[in-house]
Every structure is written in C-alpha cells, then in structure tokens.
Length: 322
Image 1: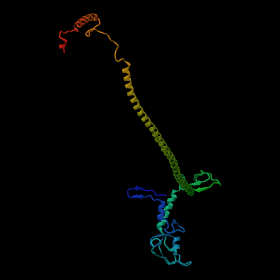
Image 2: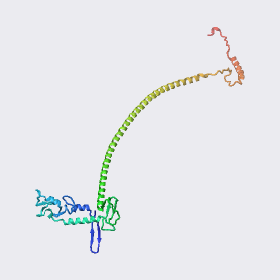
Image 3: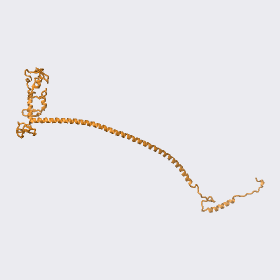
Image 4: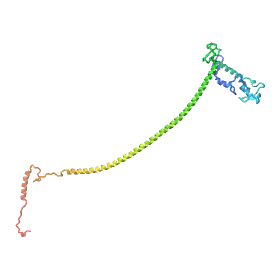
C-alpha cells in the first residue's frame, strides 16, 4: 500500500502529499521496537515513555516485572535509549499514557486500508463480496448473485488476503521448486564439467596413442627409405664403377680397333699399280708419237754406238810400253 504524491495549487495555499510505502512506514513508526509486533488497540497498545519512546503494553509489563512473583519493579531502563524510567505508583503499565501520535497514525492507516476495499458502483457504501464456488465478485444489495447454502462467500478483503496467501504459497512453492531445479542444474553442470574433463582426457589419450603409432610408423618408413636408398645407391655406385671400367676398356679397345681399322684400310688397297711400259725416249710424254720417237731414238742410239768404242793401236815397241 502506498500514499499518492501530488501537488494541489489553490488561491490561498499549496497542498503537497508524498508517496509512502505502507510496509516501510509501519516498520518504522507502527511497530514495537522490542517485540517487533504492530501496535494495536489490545495487547500491543502503544504506551509513551517519559523519554518519548513508545513500547507496546505487553513489552512494558514484561520489563516492569520484578524479581519475585507478583512483584513489580519501581524503575527500569528504556530498552531503546537506556534512560532510567520511574514506574507510576499504583498504576503499572496501564498508568503510562497512550501514544496519541501512534494511535492517530494507526487510525489513518486503517482508513487508508478501508479505502482500498472496492465498493459497489451503485451502492457506494456496500463492500463487495466474493463467492469462491462461482469465482465471482458481487454486491449483496444488487442481488446479482443467487447465494446458495453450499456456496462459500467471503468478503472481498478476506478473499484478496486468501488469494494473496495462495499466490504467496504458490510463489514460495515455485521458488522452492526453482531452487531445487537450480540446484539440479548446478549439479548437472558440475557433472557435465567432470564428464567433459574425463572425455577430454580420453580424447587426449586416444589421439596421443595415434600420434605414437604415427610417429613409430613415420620413423619406420623413414628408416626403410634410408635403407633402400643406401642399397640402391650402393648398387648404382657399383654400376657406375663398372660402367667407368667398361667405358675405359671400350675406349681403349676402340683406339686399338681404330688403329687396326686404319692399318686394315692401309693394307686393303695395293700400295703400287701394275702399269709398266718401256719407252726408248725418256722424254716422250705420249703414246701417239711413240713410234716416231722410237725411230729417232734408234738412229740416235746407232749413231752413238758408232761413236762408242774405238780400238786404239800403238806403234811403239812393246819394250817401250810401260
């Protein structure tokens, strides 16, 4: 419940009202500071102490109770400010004056609360009733609702209070269920975290095993490649050595074969031809005039022969010859 906050301007004055929360106001001004019960007109009637603090009659009687049964203390200390308070003679707690300010505030709150109860729009003085059986709000003066003996009829304020209590109970139950659900979800989250951690460890372990297998296989394949490479390299080097040796031998043989071929080529053809012819004149250069040359040669030879050789004789006495 709250009071409205408004400003009303008139020709002579300014009226201001402020909004106050009923629960906060009651706790601050309408509640006994000792037992924390709301002041009322009965057991918790507000009593004003000389120190200006207010206590309910029940708390005041309890504080004034003496050490023995039926005895009453002559003085006590205010439980709020600890000031010494003298007990009035012959009156006890009832002798303390009532707190008129608190009583006026209680009356004001009661009137404000009564204003909150809805009234009939036709009969402004009649409070509306509520039928639980029909779930209907009605005015008894309007006769809009036919009451029956088996129907449960409540005043609207009681119905509101009951529904408020039901709603509060359901809200409390829902809050409790939500709390249980929250705890269940929290446990589920914790379980999820634990399961996820275990799953992650399993995944790490499984993939570590795969990595180990891959690493071992990788090392094995690399060693195989190295071994095959060395074997092939060794075979190829041996082949290169054989090729080099064979090449040198072939080149040597080729050189010898070339010499033999050259020699064979030189021997395969006659080194001289078979042409031979006698010519009487060594200066003759042709065959056509060979006969002419022969004749001239013969004559020359004959003439030369005539001149060649001569028998000489001497007339000297042999004895004189040396």
